[in-house]
Image (cartoon, rainbow, N blue to C red):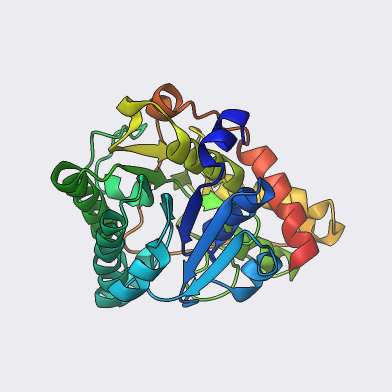
Length: 331
């Protein structure tokens, strides 16, 4: 965090919704490390209590256990807050295909509750987690913010609706918002367990157990994998920027390079072999492609660099090495 950002946030209060989750807990940790007052709102449906346990004794930290689907909980969490980093959501394309109603309740109704509570509390800025899934069936690469296709899943629809609501709340009520379209974020505290675990922690856990990771398709599908510290930097830039032109729009949050799933699995195998040589012998297997998956994803980060001074420091190699080291110590 820069000295300028610290000045903006000194004596201010930041609410992180979904703060017990992977991204939320990393945001809270960074803010608390710089003596910023933080409120965490979480219902622990997907977030983990262990992610915020180290913060509970910090005088600058307050936990509000509640649900964004409950407007009263949102108002309680927003009381006295200056900035909001809204991370609370139900992720996962497959989960949304299996249960579109709950995904919509959390991601759309819950999002609307948070916007209303932020407006009522006269919050200075509402920064929210958007998604690269919004690009849908638009095939051109790299993905540029103002050109999207039709959504390919219920999850993608909910994240696009978030952008529409944020835009309307600025135009109607004057609430300043910034949407951050995350591209395949990975890193410490990302959960490898559960039916909807992200690919990197899942593969890491399988390699450590000497189990073969299963790649959907032939492994040629590619993603713009984005290390958590790049995402933290972008969130901080978004809540502290004094550039009026940077507000009330959306940004890609990525590194700007793509890696195939086969390349990813091969890199993980290589880096984990440094801790356990026998991992080199674990076979990588394949299965059918998954419904709703976008074949390729690559972000243009020019807009974020220009308007929000985004300077991602971790590429896939440096990020994976950090993540693998953390998982080796914590799994």
